[in-house]
Image (cartoon, rainbow, N blue to C red; front, side, top):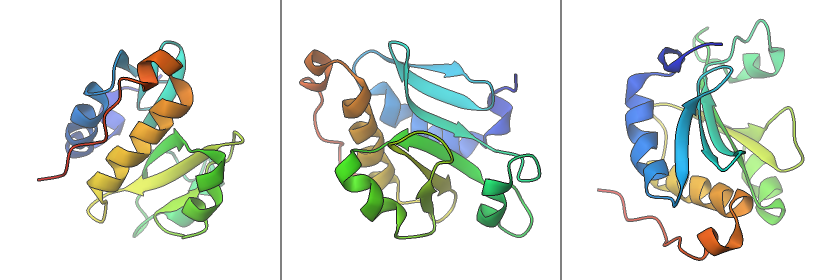
Length: 139
């Protein structure tokens, strides 16, 4: 198992406040990188994959460096429009409603907050979803 060091700290610093504001969501080390969960369901998972070991990520590399990727659940109605836009989004190589986004200097963190909130709403019990307010505007 790899640790949180696989993800640049500045990306974790941006993701943590987004995830902390969602009811009962918690952070834990994943088999690679870090994930945020509600109960036993993963809402978001951020990691730096090895493009040689997982070739699907090779085309997402920048200047030969492995990308930092976040996978998340997307409502089926939004999945196609999101992933056909191209970089930084793509379909994850597993799951029926799983999308991925390459994170970095280009990232729109307001959009990431919305995507994590949508993913939470896909995975959380309805009584917790009812407590979710829209993401706060970015500063």
